[in-house]
Amino acid sequence: MSQRDGQPILVWSAPYKFELKAFGVNKVFAEDRGEVVLGKLKKELGEIVQHIEPRQATKEELLMVHTPAYVESLDKTETWQEILELKDHEFSRESATRDLKEIYEDVKLQTGGTIKAVEIALKTGLAASLGGGFHHAYAEKGTGFCGVNDVAIAIRSAQAKGLVKKVMIVDLDFHQGDGNASVFQKDADVFTFSVHSEEGWPEEKETSDLDIGILSAEQHLYLDKIKEGLELAMSRFQPELVVYLAGSDPYEKCALPGSHFIKRPLAEMRKRDELVIDFFQSRNIPLAMVFSGGYGRDVWEVHYHAVHYMLEKAGIIKEAAVTA
Ligand SMILES: [Zn+2]
Image (cartoon, rainbow, N blue to C red):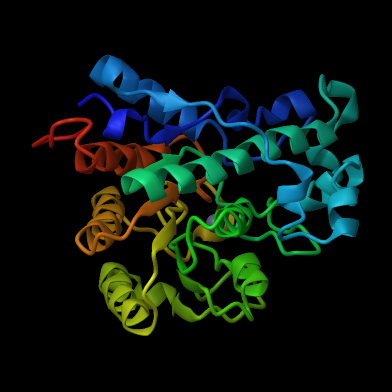
């Protein structure tokens, strides 16, 4: 079997890269992880590693989550300047070869990628889009680098097509999944579970269905708290699908200054992703993974292992005794 049920389970496209320099942006950002991970896997494992190119999310799909006024504002450069929190010295229109608002096109493509990953996961059990996870986007505003809430849109889209009803979001990004908590606040069919740093941005947290805020001083309990949280979440809600936001910003090599409160070693980050995949696989619950946050040149190391592990579990590659 080269791909699960004859279908690749990885979704990616070149514009995922967010080549921010082309937009005149000079800022540490979550770039290139999908390209690096996919490139290394293809080089190492050859043709068995295939991916699907997504289509852009449509306006109708965006409106399943976002307000009409907000969707309209996404056509403006200033809106994206605010979403990316660009200070004057971080943005120069003169050095740009693309207008900043064109980033919207790339974000719509990543949103289409998350929609696709959810649909593949529902068919095959496991899938990943090598980007996405913009969990700070609210219905009516974008914050924290997130303009469009791809995860919420993918869930609503799959529900509207009758593919699934009850969905759990497992969000292990360093930052709380405040946008998702807000969007699904009153929705009994979507359970939001977030494990995040209690300290740091966002200062004002939203209320998820289950929140586990970790203090810097107790970060050695990171994996234990995730395990406990997964059990507790499952005791409260039985999902037909899990969307996993596998943020790599709790990794000790994440370059985002604001994520310094939690610095976990690579081995532990990799165990975390194995734990989540195994937890739901052993219960026969489909899981779609997206990358979410993770900044700087080394965070791909976390995602690489998660995707490799997923390909093993899907039977696409043989379980390796040692992985890079
Ligand atoms: Zn984050």
